[in-house]
Image (cartoon, rainbow, N blue to C red; front, side):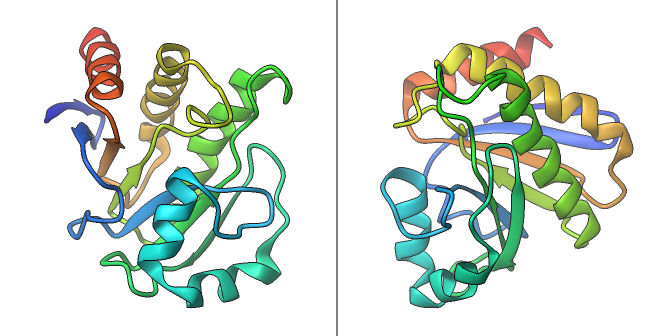
Length: 176
């Protein structure tokens, strides 16, 4: 685990399963617009949370790229799931601003709901095709820029699925 402090917020990077982070109040779902079960992170979160998550999410969708909504955690070890729709790289433009909006909106929504610790996947880097290094730059820059305005969020963890993604996030975090 790599960790750095920015303002009152500790930023961590780990390799692991985002559905198995019991010390976090909220995890972020790299959602689809309808907030339904899907592949990748969305599928893993919905399967771990159980059918109640999709039922709760149905009236919350659809959402647009860059938007975030919050739900309960259901069968997850986390009280909340924050659902963000990241941009499809090369299609939803400006992709960097939409991706930054995902992180910023999720952090602000977490803060308004009293979340102290939140976990993010690498939003849009799977089937949405966002290259990992630029995505890591946007994610970490946005979290660092948003940190001073957060009242309750004191820990942000990036939970990366692969060792190679973790290495990229670690490098970007160390260079900040």
